[in-house]
Length: 120
Image 1 (spheres, rainbow, N blue to C red):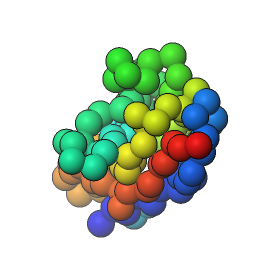
Image 2: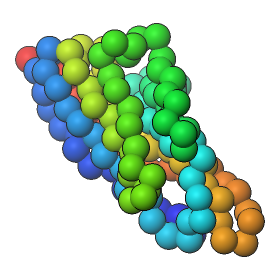
Image 3: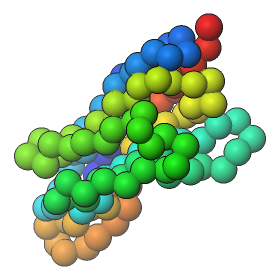
């Protein structure tokens, strides 16, 4: 089994910054894409940013130029640096990873989610 654990969320004022971290552990042979999704109250979960094992990243239009996704392949970590935060960024943020196990099986896994609140 694979576990994803997020950290780094909390309350921040508009214009501030937060850095989310996600650690993947368990029966992991390799991880292809890792990324972050978010879900605000009453809304569907949406992709925020993703990054593949080669380091190529993609971002939702709403966060381009403000958020940066990065990863440490050796440690199975993914990060989301969030700058110039807005009230509209308030949501529960979820880590996501596409994992290949030692038995050759592939699966998509999710973290438990972490709250980010942008408010004065």
